[in-house]
Amino acid sequence: MAEPLLSVDSVSRRFGGLLAVNAASLSADTGRITALIGPNGAGKTTLFSLISGFLKPSAGTVRYAGHDVTREPPHRRARRGIARTFQIVQPFAGLSVRENILVGAHLRHRARAEALALAERVGRDVGLGDLLERPAHALTVAGRKRLELARALATEPQLLLLDEVLAGLNPSEIRDIIPVLRALSARGIGVLMIEHVMQAVMSLAEHVFVLAEGRIIAQGSPAEVVADPIVVEAYLGHGAAARVGSGHAH
Amino acid sequence: MRAFLPIVVVAAALAAVPLFVHANVVLNFLVVTLLIALAGQGWNILGGYGGQYSFGQAAFFGTGAYTTAILQVHYGVNAWIGFAAGIAAGAAVGAIIGALTFRAGLRSSYFALVTLAFAEVLRIVASVTPISGAGVGLLVKLDLHAQAFQFKSRAVFYLVILALVAVSLVIAQLLERSRFGAWLIAVRENEDAAMALGVDAFTIKLGAMVLSAAITAAAGCFYVQYFLFVDSGIAYGTWISIEALLTPIIGGAGTVFGALAGALVVKLLGEGIKLVTGDVPGLDLMIYGAVLVLVIRFAPRGLVGAFTDLRTRLLRRSKPAPAGEVAHG
Image 1 (cartoon, rainbow over the protein chains, first blue to last red):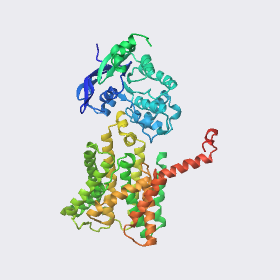
Image 2 (cartoon, rainbow over the protein chains, first blue to last red):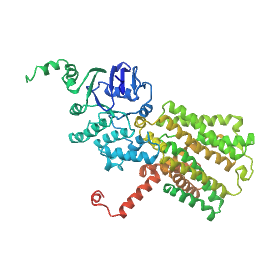
Image 3 (cartoon, chains in turn orange, red):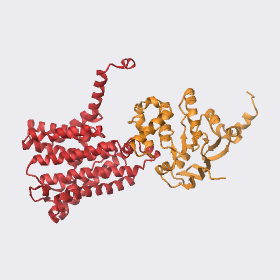
Image 4 (tube, each protein chain N blue to C red):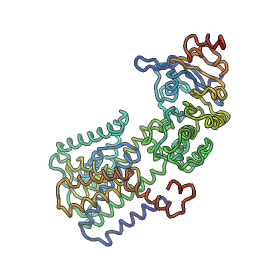
């Protein structure tokens, strides 16, 4: 079998005495949506930072499109085609929505006119078409999440790392953004998403990795993973699987 | 091309001044004002667009000044070549300081303090080194010929510094519409987010620092040709670091005309008050302080920012507001 687009091989990251990520391995491939789930504090965002280059692993390797990128800085990985969004949105607050997206669009388009055209198209694709002249700080939470997505997409990535783009959105906003994500993978972009909104994970992801206390404890299709007793225990505590399994006593 | 129209208009208006005014006092005032505007525009590239607040533009101003002075005084090099060498030397110092500070990951006030320290070290070294005239300074020989970059008429000096300022305005305007500029502004707004979008923050900041240093060094070179004297206190003194930083902040950091507007306003106020009160030492610094406080309180985006806001508001009022907007008004 060919090597997947992204393969993370037993990476670890230690912060002093805390082993935040412990020999975690996962992979993601073009044209499909892979989800990374896990309880709070499991190390999901740390693992994302290791993949996007904002942190260097203490051990293990990150390979992308056949290259070992473990030691490369974030901007070099972005140039290779890895884009990420931030869980805590990081807009360029003083700039307009259009100018925000333009920064990403410039990665593969030096000419301003070309980059502006791309920024406008991406802005419309994610539903920010009417807000392009708005200052980024004036956007709602949902708007800022879309802006994160738009900026990342404007770099024309092959692998998109989405860190909780649905968190903080109301159900109708989630309903609006799910088709956008599905369209991305249909276009051949590999998506790796950290998500807590299980309804979205169940409907979007083909493959799910479960991280708990820094280790990948399970993986498989969404249906397999939610039925896995190890996963249930990781979320709900020791013995929870047995209680849930024994049915509807109360 | 339409983007450059305001620069052409402003430069043409300023160029017309010597046709009407011949008083040396006025021309001298304008030359010094434009000199500060040029040094300030250097700061504006790095600080205004890039968000890296240098407190040590003197390091570049002084290197430009000393390079051209030393080459002329000790080695008999032509003043124009000295001028170009001064700009190159200033840019090189910018590259060295930038590489060291940005590689070390210094941001915000740490960056400001370290740039200040570099300028002070250079000042002390220049004040004891024989080649820079140590405590006495360097006098450039009077030679009022164009090939020596010296002119009998102050009006010509004025046009030269005006041309340099105009070039610096064009550089800022080009920057605003280039990829380098978009990335530089992105680094100012949020360095991590910029890196995630493929921006090599280190290289971008370094490039901005070299450009900034070259422009401020050009002001230093011009200073030597105009006053024909330089010592360590003038070249590397904190006075020029402060003026280079205050004028664009007051005028509007990160705008094309910020440094020029700030220099004109600050210098006019300073001179005006000197006329009234006589030459009280330190008074100009008090004026800067007062203006800075007022600007930060009432026009945080500087004079140019306040002017833009005012124009937008007036334009909106002259048009009948759409129904939806009336409610907010």
